[in-house]
Image 1: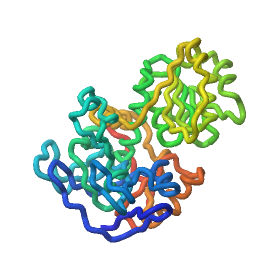
Image 2: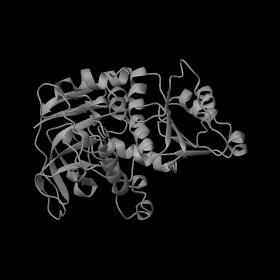
Image 3: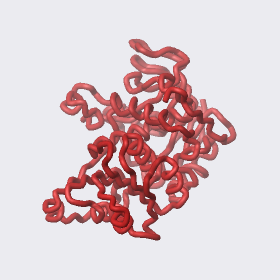
Image 4: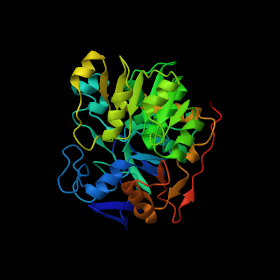
Length: 366
C-alpha cells in the first residue's frame, strides 16, 4: 500500500509499504479520509517529539519511521479475532487514543488521562496510508448517524471539541466565548451553539468569522478591529465560559481580561511559552482555569458524531478538499506550519492520485 512515512524532522516520504496485519481485537480499515492538524505540523517542523522515531515507545513498542494520521475514518475490510459489534463493510470512525482500562484514571472513566495512554498515528502507525489497523474498542460505526466517509473523518477532532466543551460545564442559555476558530475552535463553536449556548467567536481571519456566523455564532469579533471586551460590553454579553483555543499568549491574556466574576476559562490551545497569571485576581474574582486534553472515546466520540450530523449544511466549508498523499507536505503540512492554510480542516484521501473536492452530505437522521 502507499503511505506517508515520517523518517525525521522535515522528512516525510510517500512509500510503498506492507499492508498491516490485523491483530486480535482490532479492525483493518481501508482509509476513506484522514485529517491532519497542528500536532502533525509541529512534529514535521520541530520533531520528533511525540513520534517514537528515535526511542521505542513503552506501550506500543514502535521504534523508527512511522505513518502519522490520528483523525481517521474508513471501511472495515477485515476483523481480528475476538471482535464483536462490527462487520466487514462498516464505515467506522477511530477515536485514536488507546487506554489500558484498568488504571486509576480509566476506572474513573477518564481514559484520556490513562497512565499508559498511546495514540494511533502518534505512537504507532496511523491513517496516512491506504489501510490502517486500529483497536475495535476505540471505533464507532458512522452509519447510525447518517455520516459519509469525509464527514466521519471530522469525528475525532469534534470529539476533542466536545470534551473541551464539557470540561467547561457549559449549560444551555449561557454565554460562551471561543477565542480562535481553527479546526478545534470551529468545531467547538458549533458544539456550543448546538448545546443551546449564546456563542461569541473571536478570530483574526474574516472568512473564518463568516463561517462561524453561518454556524450559529451570535457575535463574531475581529480583535484587530474591535476589542473583545468592548464588543461584549456593547452587547451586554456576560460570558460564563471562555474557551481559549488559539494557544497564543495574547489569546490567554484576552480570555483573562474578558472573564467576569465566576467565569470558567478552559485552556484548549497548547501554550508554547510559560504564561504569567495573577493568582490574586483568580481568587478575588473566583475564576476557574481549566485544562483539557484529548477526549474520552466512549462518551465524547459518539456525541461528536451526533453533533456533526445535526448541522443542516454540509461540512465542506470547513474541509473543502481531500488532498492526495503526493501533496501532503506541500499543500497540507507546510501551510499549517506557516499559519496560512486556506482550509480550516485539511483532509487527505490516501487512495487518490489527484486531490479531490470533499463529498459531504447532510444526514437525514437529524
